[in-house]
Length: 118
Image 1: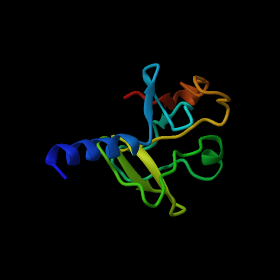
Image 2: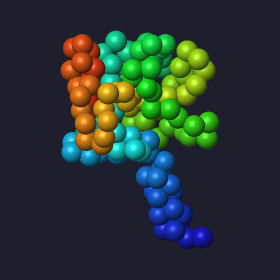
Image 3: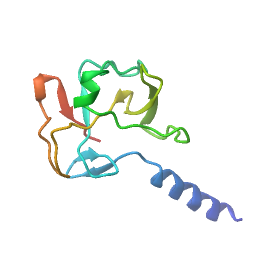
């Protein structure tokens, strides 16, 4: 395999493994649903403070066992031991009341939830 072919395959692999993409200037998950950050999460702490009922309303963008950090995306371990994606150290979540791709009804909720921007 040539180095050019290897580089192209590596680039394709890293693109396809990104847990989110940009749509209309914000980040969305694989389903196209808006992703949010929570002001009470501390960037780089490796923790989410949104657990229990909070995580029912704000479902985490979960990472699979085989996923690995790439670029600005890292993986944190939640209190229950499951894995969650984080962007620049901040865990990212969906909002249960968004019903279709493009909805952003959680933006500004409680003054502490915000759409995730790249």
